[in-house]
Length: 166
Ligand code: CTP
Ligand code: MG
Image (cartoon, rainbow, N blue to C red; front, side):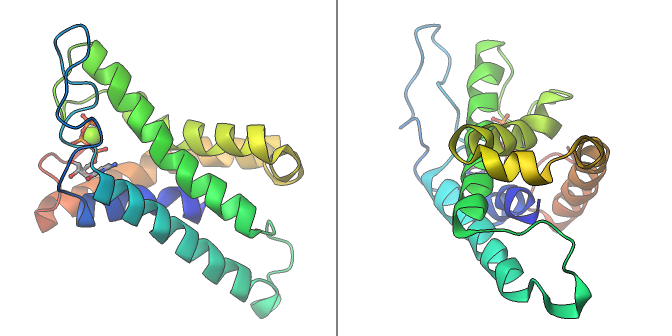
C-alpha cells in the first residue's frame, strides 16, 4: 500500500501553487475543491507514489520477501493516482457539505485514499486486487490506515507542514 500512502504526505510537504479548481466556485457558491488541492501536490504526490512502488518492484525477491504482493508499473501507478483522486473527490463533497479547507471530516479524511486507490485499481486492473487484496489484507488496511494517517498528520503538524493535526 506504500504507493497509495505516500502521495498524501508528499503533497502536503511539496504542494502549493495554482489550485486544481482554478479558484472557481461550484453552483452552490462554494469552492469546487478549495486551495488545499493543487496541481503541484497532485503531480509530485503521484510521482512519489510511483517512485516508491518502482523501488518496491526493484527490491521484491530480495531479503526472502517472496510472499508479499507483486507490484507492476500498472499497479503502483493506479494505487498512487487513485489515492489522490480519492482525496480530490473527498474534498469536492467536503465543500458541498459546507466544510472549509482543513476542517475535520472523520472517516472520509482517513479512507478517501484507500477507497480511491483500491477502486481505481479494481476498475482498471481487477486481477491485481483479486489476487492480493484478500479479506484479511483488506481488514488489515482498514485498521492500519487511520493509525498511520493520525500519526503522520501529528508529525506534519509539529513540522509546520500541516495547519491542523488531522
Ligand atoms: N495538497 C496539495 N495538493 C493536493 C493535496 C494536498 O497541495 N492535491 C497539500 C495542501 O497544501 C493541503 C495539504 O496538502 O493543505 C494537506 O492535504 P489535505 O489534508 O488533503 O487538504 P486540506 O487542506 O485539509 O483540505 P480539505 O479540507 O479539502 O481536505
Ligand atoms: Mg485535510
